[in-house]
Image (cartoon, rainbow, N blue to C red; front, side, top):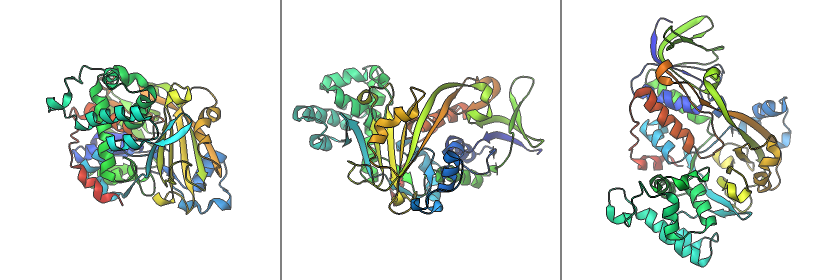
Length: 441
């Protein structure tokens, strides 16, 4: 291995694959290695046999669950505006087919409701009483009309300095309304945004409404046919088209450092590939990360859609933390044979949250209760890590572990920030989003 690479990427999780695609498109020489023999790392999709083996230790699932190969069970989920922009920016959409997710819902006072995203929907929503509907409608109109470069639309407020909670109090919205707007529309996972400048809050609401209009489904989300495991592979293909090299099944990938503390290469099976920079997930440089939390998750196989979601074949339900008396939100995502991830008549639901105790079963109960009867349930938890190294000192760029959110917002933000650290450039995502429409069906 005498060649020197600009970047060696370790692990084929979604973040690592998106980055190797972006860096290859930029003209960097990329080598991508993984200790596993399959793509995807933590973000792979499993068939029923693999799922059974992973959780139950043997590979004999009951026959009534259907053919193993008809299952593509994701280890996590879902796409939103920023990811769609990256898909279009890199032209990776030609390797993937997407279908809109049918519904977007929120949990409020022990029931599931459709998330209203526009002034018209606000007036129809049973989430709010009559007077609150009018206040919410005014607020939604303000958000829809807001344009950065049109001071007339600002109504005298500078959103760079006004806090989100001040903007909300100007419209007099009730706490329950703020709860669903902040968590199910703007997709914040806690309430700290209320004290931040309101600009990003308004932009996030606008992104939700624009995505909703774009995909013309009942939600602003899209999801790949055959599951998310398709995404890392599509970015891997993209990287290869631009000259990236892939090596799977490389055991013991050891990152090597020079006397100055900077990375010089990666050794596997006695051979060292030289490089200037390393990009990897936390498992490859475990001495340069720290644990910040734990995700608890349940994967459920069912024979029916989630009750109260208008029989949606695919849906996201967000359970804001206040509604559960918790510190963190809970996420419920369901998909089915309509997305080619299960046999006909079967649905797969995921319940995930940041673990706050040592008993994930008890913690996940509020979400699981909403599912109705399940055929089979698998419980899972994993630790969450963030990097502690100084990337300017060692040239190592480590991604953060996946959090419990099911809508990818945080995943994509991490990728965009890592891209800037690696290249010194800002990723230009001002793309023509109409290109996404073609690939919906």
